[in-house]
Image (cartoon, rainbow, N blue to C red; front, side):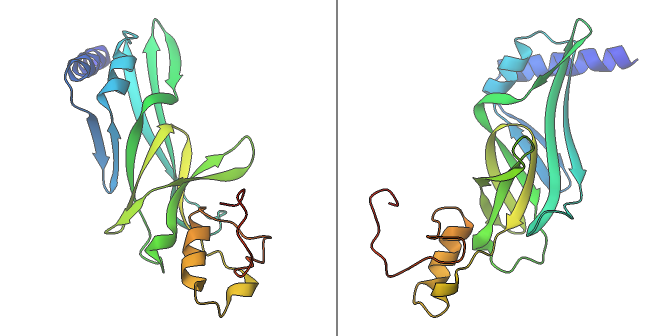
Amino acid sequence: LANVHAYKAVYALKELADSTKPLVLASGNTEVKVPNSVLKAIAGNSPDSVTISVGISKSTDINGAVSYVYEFTITFVKDGKTSTVSVFSEPIEVTVEVADSIKDSRKVAAYYINESTGSLDYVGGKYRDGKLTFTINHFSKFVVIESNLTFGDITSHWAKDQIEVLASRKITNGKTASTFDPGDNLTRAEF
């Protein structure tokens, strides 16, 4: 019976790949929209079975996290060999739920958890109605963070709010980790 279901799923994938429609997977408040070109690439391998999964875990050790940690994977089996699809020719759109406790939605963004470097790489996204939608070109682990960056020398500056929003979205950096120097001239390299 399992082989029949796997055949039907692979057949459905081929049918969807032959159309122009994306595959939209939704569960609760999480949605993954896989573009047709990605489906065609997977179907082009003539797989025996395809698995798209979303792993969810608590984000207790990530400062500012306002979502679970999501791990997205696509695997397919062909001739008994399992392969992982991790890089895509066209971005995949992901929508995840964000905690109600956020203070400033302008400072909320998705981050890729880069396990090889131990860093959080900015992805971005758009917040709306308690959810963040972002696009990615690869699957891995992601988390939504509300970043509250500030600098000691902008506490009474007229552009404090704008500087903090730009810094939290990784659009600008300070001169150091604790100073922005808002009165300094902007160099060509900084621009």
